[in-house]
Length: 311
Ligand code: HMG
Ligand code: MG
Image (tube, rainbow, N blue to C red; front, side, top):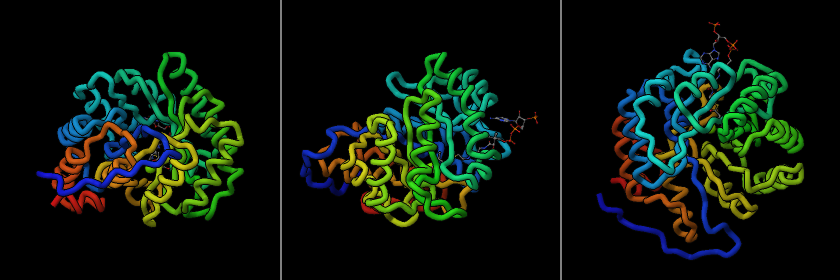
């Protein structure tokens, strides 16, 4: 399939030269599918994403299989995965049980996932915010002792479907609590896609003022209200150079009803290519991957770039 067009490149000197994309499609995308995707399809998806140039691909989650049955095949997936040198394959791990499963599967990078709000902490982790920090502490300590990288997700950073807008201070405090455990990276999540660019800038200032260096911070936008790309640009302008995205715009969270797909990686790469920002990801190969995946799932990709180029 030929790529019909590429954006004109007009660089801006106030933006990073390179952005690391954390591809979350195989985890955030597939955790939200109503049908269980066969492990062989997941493996081909992972391989195709790497072939497109991704160097960080979130592979799966070691959560309770009853909570997320879509990812209950984590062990089978990792044992069959052909791990390419130079590619990072982080996995989600909420607790000690998840960590022991992940270590037995030979992972070298994990992600814990906290919440800025009490309601989502209860719904997603069956614990309060404070209890979830207690649950994460030994996980991070053991993982760091073993030399693993540990990303900390923080969900509901901009708005929560049960609690409404989330105060900046509350988010910054939760961010500091997670990073104080010894995490190596923080990903700020707009789980339900309600953020707008001014709010993104304000939160990044607040997190930075609270002592978290923005070189360690990623942004994780869902695109429910069509703001994900605008929010990404605001984040890049604020000094962010790690962006989470999901091939084809797959995604959501089964424990936050109003969460729809993530920022589509193709839409992100189109913007970054146009800004002359290096990502290492080839747009044409990625579009082909999402067209293939959409066929497996039996419905078209919501990504505008996949729709424009993938026909
Ligand atoms: P719980 O029921 O409180 O667990 O769930 P527990 O600690 O009371 O243990 C109960 C039983 O579960 C025990 O078994 C454990 O061994 C077992 P028993 O002794 O009764 O036979 N168990 C496990 N089994 C397998 N793997 C495990 C595990 N843990 C306990 N890891 C728990 C607590 C955290 C496990 C549960 O709430 C859970 O799995 N939650 C995960 C929910 C989830 O994955 N949500 C989606 C990811 S977050 C997201 O999408 C947002 C993000 O994208 C960012 C954004 O958009 O904002 C990251
Ligand atoms: Mg998410």
